[in-house]
Image (cartoon, rainbow, N blue to C red; front, side, top):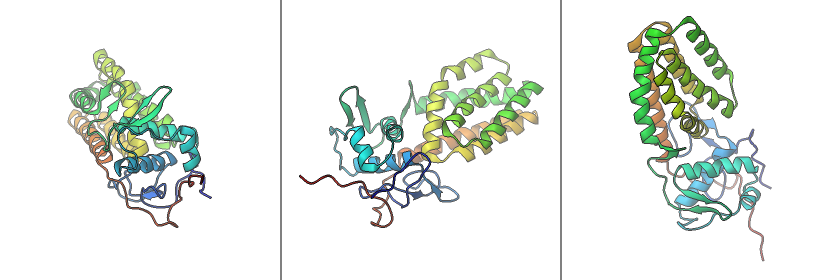
Length: 276
């Protein structure tokens, strides 16, 4: 019997074929996004990789309706919250659309190059962030107060200890708001407030599928250290590097290809359909 993939568990095998939900993958996410060390994937990521692979291989064609949530949960032996996270990610990637009362339908056999987070396309979001957050970091280095530094340092310390993705994502948006606050221009903070929901959605997406949390913590630490040093050039450079890594990871996720089929003893298999 297939082992249950709860929120705290990971699958046990590589790849992402119809014959199994993936387990160990290269650090960075499904499809072999590069990283330093192999990492264990979450149940949500495993389910997403499995369903995405099935769509991209044509097992679910454009126009097809995916099985019901109850049926997918039964086949893959995951909880409904885990499945719904995976279905939301499929929609973000432009592979499916959810129709209230009707179900989830395949609308593309390949992920879009420019996914949408909330009300904004990723490319639009990144363009604004480059034009706003990079100079904001420089101003913050020049204008920050001891209270700003204390707040940012304590926030970063909490982020580095946090293991829950939802809690970390909430603090991630607070971090960027705090940097804008330190720039001492209310318009900057207002801009970040406007895109806050999109930032949170993008952050959750990148952390679930790109293993970005530890790397983001290091990048945030470099930004704070530049603010402590009163170095506007270093702060701008650190923020620019952070946004570049965001863009790179996002591109790697949406352009990833399904992994190889696992051997029967390498990964669990969905429950077979009952015979008539």
